[in-house]
Image 1 (tube, rainbow, N blue to C red):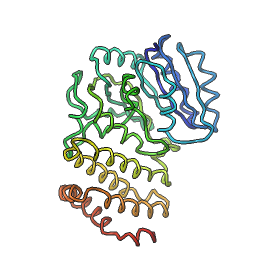
Image 2 (cartoon, one colour):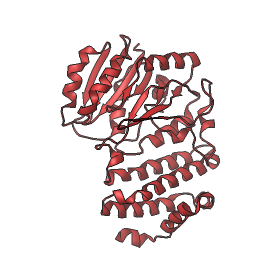
Image 3 (cartoon, helix red, strand yellow):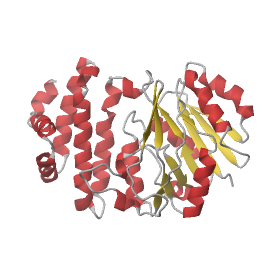
Image 4 (cartoon, helix red, strand yellow):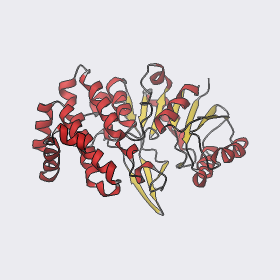
Length: 326
């Protein structure tokens, strides 16, 4: 069996893909494979990948979507094609430190867990900042469900980055690794919650080696169109699935609080949205608040700071006809 599969989804990242490819060359051997998923690029990125592929010391496959879809859909395509005992992801505009992936394989085999989580280096222009996974114990076997709470501080489910770690294939075989199809943002939120609710074991390790490029102009985090609003569908799914959990009463306050935090985050940056999208954001957020368990929402609003609580209370009072008109 292939030891490690690296899934690399990409779309129009020609200025950055060579750095990603060089870092893969410094991490993979004959027992590994790379599954590239071209999400219908138009800038020649697939040509760069094809030309570089002979320099990689492992099996290389390139799959092309005939129509541009979403990052989650592309990752699912890669997961279906991957054959490795262990699975991980690399976005096409990011890169890895030398020997980072072999170190992660050593750690997950030593610990015997379903998945491991790692810190990251965030890169904006020439700035480099270490961003730590919000998990205290390191190198210790943990129960993922225990890392969801408490609801009033950042926890492991608030660190949804699929590329920040390594995953045993048994998670995919158990149906725990699929991303929601077609979502352009927040697709990793239902994904990370499902892992933490249903996987049996995990660990955080101190191997730092994933370089996450921020501020890329083509990134959806920099674009204020309707694709940003997919967070509503993502969090609606998260709430539905959490409501079906045997510990729903215990976990739902965290899910609702996180949903509210994302809504206020977008409202705080509303000036970057196109005017029509800004109106949609308000209307969809108001409707989302009414879909939440109202008793849990009441408790959440009472625990938030005055500014955010006021923002959300005002939205909550919006009437359905007003939303329709907007």
